[in-house]
Image: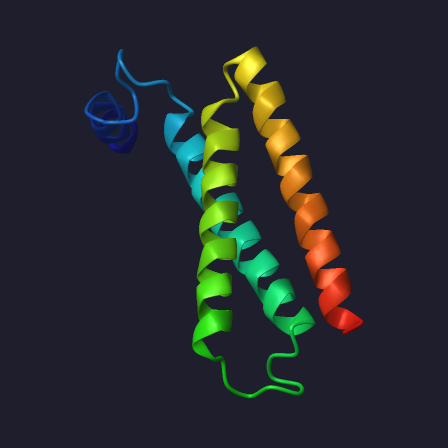
Length: 115
């Protein structure tokens, strides 16, 4: 009886429909978690390299603007990275943009640490 009830529930499951891929919800969870995690980690590195919470305890308006810009760019680039995974030409371009972003953040963080 329990197996029959599970089967009936499976038949009404919204994840098992003809117009939605079965792994679409898992991919959406992966995209969300990876994008938010990388955005947070890179923003934290950016702020730590600027001296936040070690030599500067407060964030001024200019630093808050720069942090918002960094977080927004990282979030948008990673969102575009996952959305372009099905298009080969666009994926190459987004990978180039992502590599450029990492290079820019690396140079900025390196300069911030040694200033």
